[in-house]
Length: 149
Image 1 (cartoon, helix red, strand yellow):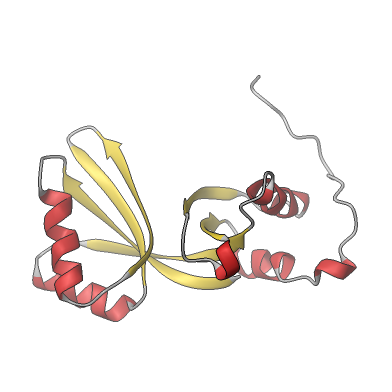
Image 2 (cartoon, rainbow, N blue to C red):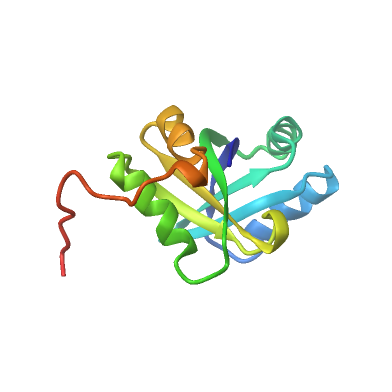
């Protein structure tokens, strides 16, 4: 588990706009660790974690694309059933809210998926997720989880 900088851009939702940005990042030798594209009507939102944040910012500046940055966690998630659930339970048990999350199916260590997680308290989430597996107790929730179902 590490922290990383995520860049978010808003693009006009029309053919080729995303490809243009990705081509520019490629020409700037910026590799992406994870990427998610969300539809928002006439505009789309693109969030990504680059391997070189400063190079990615430079590319976006050169092509005139505005961006926002956010600190996120990148967590190796087992590809076995329940891998991501386990991480979510650990965060929930400590009253940490996941604002959003997305995964890259490659990039994690030893065949793991890489999850990008935006939480309400980054430092606390780091402490919770970096606990030694051997010292963890069974997770018990301190408050009920309400479900809309």
